[in-house]
Image (tube, rainbow, N blue to C red; front, side, top):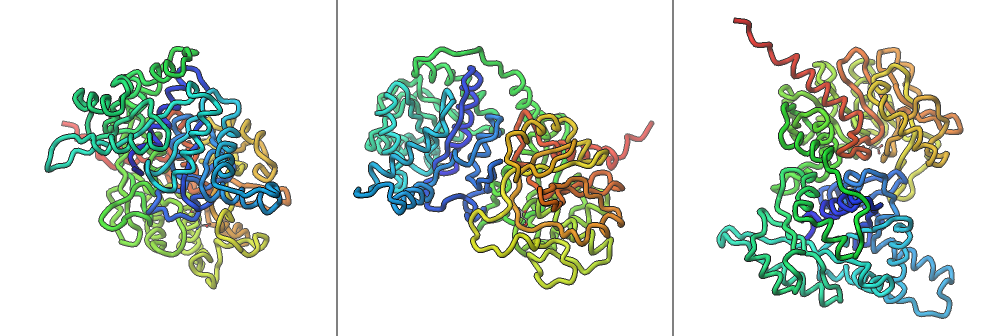
Length: 553
Ligand code: GLN
């Protein structure tokens, strides 16, 4: 079922294969008709993950990147909508003249083609089929995989079924029946699982392993226990305790290329599990509650970036997901984040939160909308303007955040924002410059792989971050804002000379920085995003300043 942890399991298997020296990539199949996740509601589907090449994708791709540690293309996401669209385009073009275009083989061929394309050059490709076995919408994908099996050979394909074993309160016993049913449904589609990953609240005992072994006819050695853990980064370590990596390689008949070394990873995990310090951060957002439940998945990448930054600083982060529409007292927090967002709901609350952070010298990190609203707040309360973003108030007097004239009218909502990686030239000696110091080299290599529309005109200190927005800081207000102390510390300079503000900061504040980008899309456990690390350091510093020193006796 969705949310059971298929994404984390896939990412963990990928990480394990990498640890044995194999290059590994992953593909996420989403059997919905949307062409991408850009038009989905985050409260229903969790966050939209944005790739460097501008794809708006299911959040699982984020887990792949966070674990595998390299950028994954939007081509690694396949939706039913995409395959149908391509197929219909091909049919209209006349590629199939004379033929009846059908689910089988045309649709399934298209699916296979896409998997093969992105696997090119890798030792392994992991293909995660979203949804639930037995879903109608999964059928073409299952069929495509079966047909791939025939092409590559049964020995070169391994099936891993991820199931959930509930422990109903009234029974108090772990039930294997849903797993048995899932196995049956999978086998009915011609796919016989080689491994079963058993997600559950607790570890699987031998009695239940035996039950599944008998039912599925697979050795209990290949039935892997995947109990709930406090941190997702424990999962590969847990799998390795059960020697999943070696078992997979044995099944493939392949020898390991190198001996795994998990020291650095395990050390970071141990910092997450046993931190020596703690800071509390308010995440003032919008998509927070659905019915009776709080959904942190809509900000998953921010949450994970905080975890990464926390591990790097040996510090736990208690994140309070605060609904911006409900005026909350922010005085107890060590830092405040206003994340990305759209539309007018909660905007006033976000602006008040930013004002609070600015005036009370609380560390502030603004992400995308969090930068735009920081500019609105500064324009109003420091520059005395009657300012807003035209996204919320189209006829406001001072349109400090606006659609730039050259952007024209938005005709379609799907994939029409400024999406993906863009380079920014960083101002020497700014806060942004000091935070990014260690990533400048990596990013200067990365820009050599990006097309000119994404790099623009670059100067000496260049950083690359992922974007997903439509509105921009209006250049007409730049000089006034700068005169009043807001520093624009990063620019994207287009080849036509247009300059887009990418970072703003307030030098007189201990830590106030906001970016038009989403640095949370480039953070991984072993390489935390610089803005997040800096933010956590600032929170720690603030906490030390606020906590009174022990009175000397
Ligand atoms: N709504 C704003 C825009 O479209 C910000 C988007 C975001 O925060 N991702 O520009």
